[in-house]
Image (cartoon, rainbow, N blue to C red; front, side, top):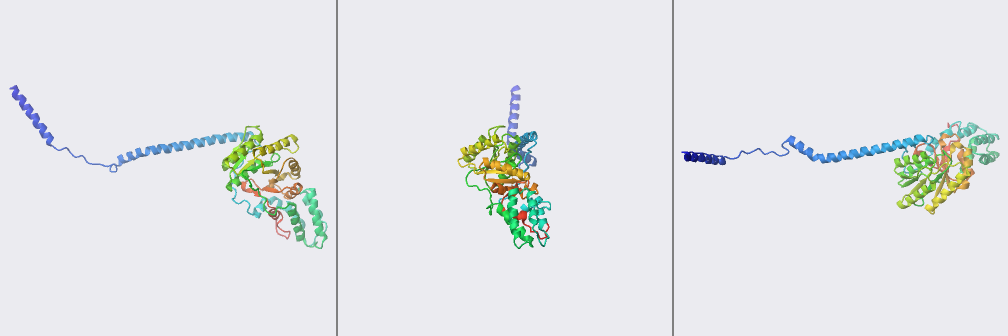
Length: 414
């Protein structure tokens, strides 16, 4: 009985197995990645994840850089605050690619104070304007204007003598003739500068050292010059040779950072000659076009300080045999005849090759240019007529005379 039961159970099991095996497996529906929006989105998200991570890494890097720049800016700001006498330079504007293009109207605007009725031009014009006949006293009146406009005693005497010669002829009734005589003599006093006296880059690198008394505008002039050279496609290195004034170094760093040029500097109180030596050496090794070297302000009456400047110039020559190629004396035009006395001392001690007259827009005594050019017999290379980089002009004697004395005394408003 039990054997029969076992046989039945086995038969049922075998039959069930055969029946199950014969039944086909159900077909599942086929789905692609694009067919399932949710799965597709998730897959795309997974694919995009690495790129997103890279993007986030770049953003973090930019933020870190900004933070570093912010910290540096804060440090720079604290340095400037510690030295309130020399605030950081304003952001320089890009100079034109052709700064030597004639711009008489721009010069005239920069000399606005001198051209006003109370200024140099205005006072001269008032003497002659509207007059049908001129008497001999006119020379004395012109002399007074010249002397009070910082033209200088000797230069005034030369001009007045020329006017007297003009008045001695049969031209007393023509004020325009006298005015033209003023213009001719002014042009003559400025020397043989019929063409632009712009700085020429004759060698590589051209080393330019700027000297002058405190507050004349050396550091700012360097920043403006660097901006212009960079705009012309030249490479520039700035040498912070004023190692005694932290704010001067900081000003150069501000200019250098904004226009993208290197600034070579040392520690506070470092030897300025070694700083400029290193800058020239770096420029030679890297093929830089121009080195602009700042120096500490020196009172012309301090013999020992002037001796240091002489040593600095000699040290520059050790870095490059023909250097410096230009020694520019920076003169504050608002100082008038005091500036002339200072300039004479510098010229006696240093191989000054030209002058930079700054802040001419801040004085009504534009005739000062005539006085200092005649007294020093030096070419005026550049004039500053404002705070922007574009306000630094190459000096041209013809353009300057036209801008300063270009309107005849015929009743036209100044």
